[in-house]
Length: 460
View 1 (cartoon, rainbow, N blue to C red):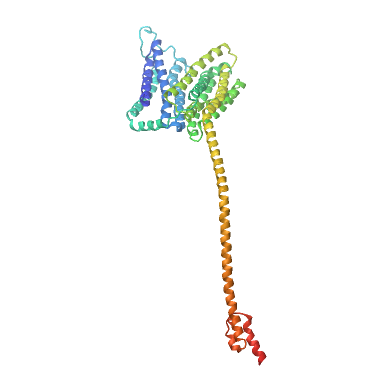
View 2 (tube, rainbow, N blue to C red):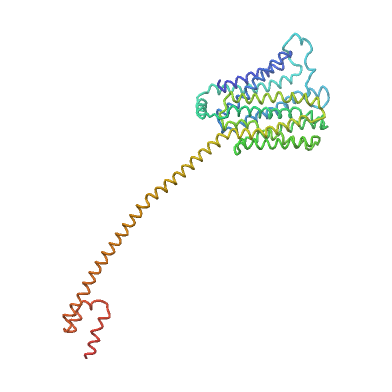
């Protein structure tokens, strides 16, 4: 199905469920409406992740963090809205603290067995559901508007379809990710659900302090999901998962060791909520780097997260009731942190093993090419070494011949030059000194030209 049509329809079904729930006067109808909301929320959780991956691919880590930040922010604000809507009525009737208490006596007792619908006596309850339902309806209208604007979205989906890739161990990665999210989400929901009762019964905290402990867990959870939007722009998803695993492991260990210390509960709870914030969206972004996540793949590991959210708190509630003196909730959080910290390196190794093998093969082929090129170069040098020697010998022989020729020419010229003055001297030896001065030998810059002057001096 089209992503926008599916998400818009799921939000529209959620809107209908929220509008009808305040009017339900029969348990069967209430169960039906809650089931509709549960199905539509499951579609929204899966479809939102797939839509971000389809648009941005492995570059959508900040957008994935923003999506899950909106989940955390809504989970933090919606109970406060319900408390504001119901707190005034409860405090006016009971004259007690305005803590949220389910108004069990606000329903009309007349005709409960005959009518399925009816107005609640507390209209603030109706307005709380109507406000959230209207907000969701407006968002669904925007999604339907995007559904009718298909042109640009189809181009992006085609571009993303061209970049499809499938890991070698695709199914194994999905199964391990199923288990990873099963324990992670199970521990998150378990601690968020039971931290209030654990703080009051086991740690001996007052109800107001226990409520503050619950609020600081979800508050740091939502705040760090907001900060993770900016961290995802400079950190890899795998790095964020490792940091989250280290934080959750350390904080859960401190919770187990100092389970009755109020100060440790406050600090470790805030760190635990911050550490759990970015794990789920980072996990979805991380797996997209190695294999393309389709709708079926996303539904598979989201079902694992939903099963952990449903099964682990139920089991822990039963076990905690049987052993009230033991901090079963904290043991569960520590065990889940250990499991997720161990399973992620296995996931990473399984995802990167084919890439490492390809890198080794490429490096080996490059080394072979380098060795082959070196051997060819050596062979070429050996083959051309004799030719180069012959060429150098020929050049040396030619230079020697050229030197001999030049020396012979110079010798002949010098012989001619020397023979001419000798002839002149022999023929003119007895001639006068003037004729001797005109000889070619006297034209040169030589000590010989002073000879006539000396001869003249002696004669005079």
